[in-house]
Length: 200
Image 1 (cartoon, helix red, strand yellow):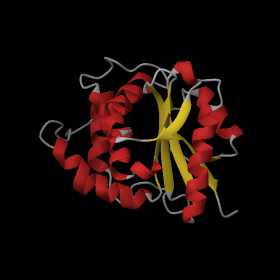
Image 2: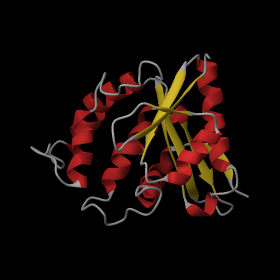
Image 3: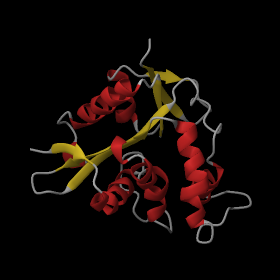
Image 4: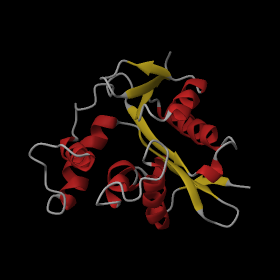
């Protein structure tokens, strides 16, 4: 039976791999970009680097990492760190596109554009998360357990709310978040954002 445990530094490669294998609206994104590592470098690894205390791994019976949740309890502070300490290591290998056109260029621009104030929901819902589970984990209640683990920790810290953005094409995930009591927030066209307040 799979178990949930705290993140360890040795899990870093597994985070990237799971992120890649779930990045295309929940499906495998391998080969969609010329740079497969970009997914994890944006949406998984920096969270575990900055907040290892807000990162959990789903481990299979045979010791493999098969899912994760990573989060920040302060979106603006995280994006300041991302801009100043994380993304500069990629400035030479991932130069800022002058006029993003491709999916890969838009993702690179996303990395370059992080900073305090960029996320419209950060004030009312200061925490945010990323969660990815390989297909073999699904249907076992592990996603709910991961998020409940995070919620408990955020409540303990006095965090007032959390939000997350997702690909609207991932309809199963949207139903999952609604079942957890999250509400759809106003979002730009083509985006889907959920939020939950802990002080309501």
